[in-house]
Amino acid sequence: MTQPSPQILTAVSSYYSAKLAEHGAHPQGVDWKDGESQRLRHQQFLRLLSVDPQASVADLGCGYGDFLSFLRATGHQGTYAGYDVAPAMVDAARQLHGPAAGHDFHTGAMPSAPADYAVASGIFNVMRGATPAEWTDHVWRTVEVLARTGQRGFGFNLLSLSSDPDKRREDLFYADPAATLRTCLDRFGRHVALLQDYGLWEFTVLVRHP
Image (cartoon, rainbow, N blue to C red; front, side):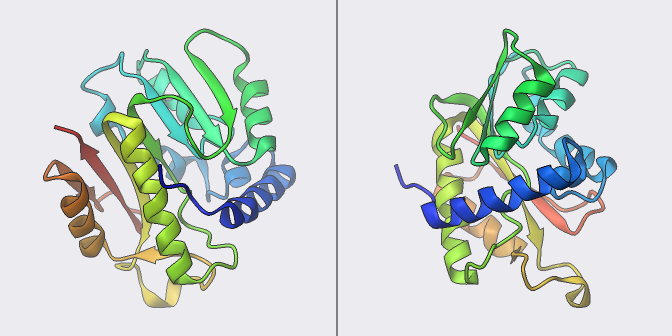
């Protein structure tokens, strides 16, 4: 299986460990603006998951496990496995959610087992010194991991080049929605949806395996 760059993963781990140390297990601790925008991102993945509340979920870049809390609040009952490259994030998730049947958390970028659906939220935003070309390669390597892990489908989000140019940051990665959709259609088949109508400067891609 193609794997993401170890150098990039090390830089990402350091960045988010520092954010967690500064802000704790809160939206700012995973570099989100606030809880409202975090929930909006979570909601986009429900289009994949709401058809089967018993479906298993792999959450790549799980942070402190906020998506697990969101899923349970919406009535989802399937097993959940969270993965994060930052050991401090995994420790925070375990402390917050405790040991219980139905969920677990792991350190790393490669899921140890398949799931019905795999998701990744916010892990493609901060380039951490990589060039745009290096980061683009990292993004698609990771999307391939999601595609292999999610037996029935997968989803991810990216900052959008449709955002206002004067509001973009040089350290963040912005993707072309149309080009991303074309690539997903070419690689993963026709069961692809792109959502960019939920009020944030980003888009979410959802793919179902036929």
